[in-house]
Image 1 (cartoon, rainbow, N blue to C red):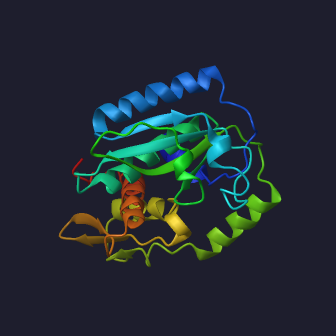
Image 2 (cartoon, rainbow, N blue to C red):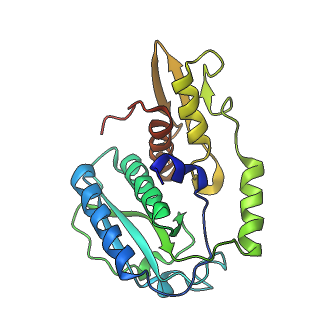
Length: 231
């Protein structure tokens, strides 16, 4: 399975088989994390204390069986910290999908105080991504949530400017970005085609909008085959 194929089948999974990830898959994940860290300037930690962070009360009943998650940490002095977190975090999500694992970006429905991390003076925990073994099919709650998300998805035209007259590579990029996960399912990213170039933006400085920007940019580059980010 390619990363592009993974982007097409990936869905957010919130119900997990309550056991630790196998040693084989864990070894693969750690290798992927090491590679991403070397290229990105962000820090990623695979955590295995999910019972504390995702208890029934702390996750508002949205998650079950979480044992493992990725903690994504950036340098608070970096103005592109949240954008990079989204971009490289989504690469990790799709790599986990290729391993047959379920994932879900988590903005606030976890107990941040239970994340047992030592942070450097300028480090900041931006968000986490749940990860783990899943049943082959979604449970009823997941199917319900997936149905809501699908009905709220924007069209490629709604997520872009110049879509109708843009070249095929731009259209493929936007179509791939439409499938990208988004905090609160707001899909705030706008892609624009002008002068044979593509750009992406979000309005405002809300940190999760910037994470959404990075996630969508990764999908756009994957679908279009064209680089639009500077990192």
